[in-house]
Image 1 (cartoon, rainbow, N blue to C red):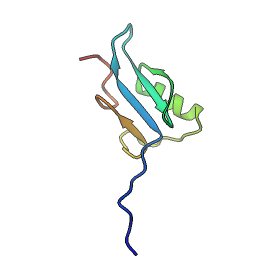
Image 2: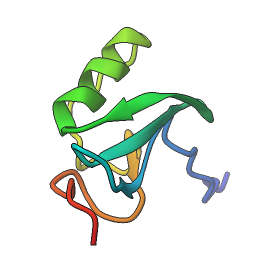
Image 3: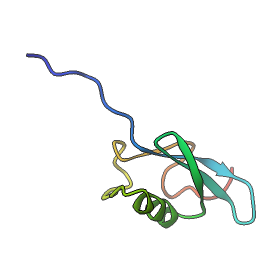
Amino acid sequence: MTESPYVSAPRITVLPVQPGNPPFRIVEIDGEVIGSATAMTDVLIAAAAAGIAVHDLDDPAAVRWVGGGKLSWKPH
């Protein structure tokens, strides 16, 4: 038997930083926009509210960071 190369997409996607006061990032869970985050703790709070336990924000199977990683919170 061969193993499938298929890797499921993470349930949480954090989109690029948007200009604002303060700058923010849109957070999607299961493909649905659930709100915005101004810090990585907001992402963890949103995940917990959706019943998702995130043990490692650097795990690409848990969170997909678009346009910068967990430490990117300022617009370019």
